[in-house]
Length: 209
Image (tube, rainbow, N blue to C red; front, side, top):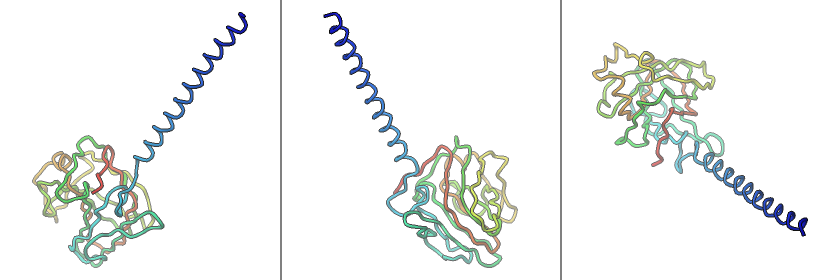
């Protein structure tokens, strides 16, 4: 009798332990799947890391001249491609929240990772919503890669950003530009072949629209 009682007690403990293990495993798997599915998933319309609006502005001679830079790259992905022609200023735009009227607060972000290729140097401007127009913006150099695809980190530390006398001195602080960031504007004055294949901003993910 004592042996049977001990056996039943052991069986109950073992069953409870097994149930806890199953719940734990399935719960962990579900959480992991949710994390993976929510991380880096693209939008329903063409996008690169959920950024949908990569646009040629019509300023400077570019190919394409206007409209979306996104082209199919393989079965599922997209690449943003643009060529700058002639020795003149060229402008392409990325709306950070995927529509012009929206903005992002990047004050707590350390910077961004950009995966790209370029045959010559260019710059990226951080344009705030309240000071959108004009070339007098804070910018940082996007160096040439010699046409090779590289992944490079660009810091939002203020000393990493400057302005060009030719384009004008910003009338606003870099901190204010971070707090109401409407878009990245890529500019260059030389002939260039550029592709963008990835963009990740620390602490920020754009909404799909």
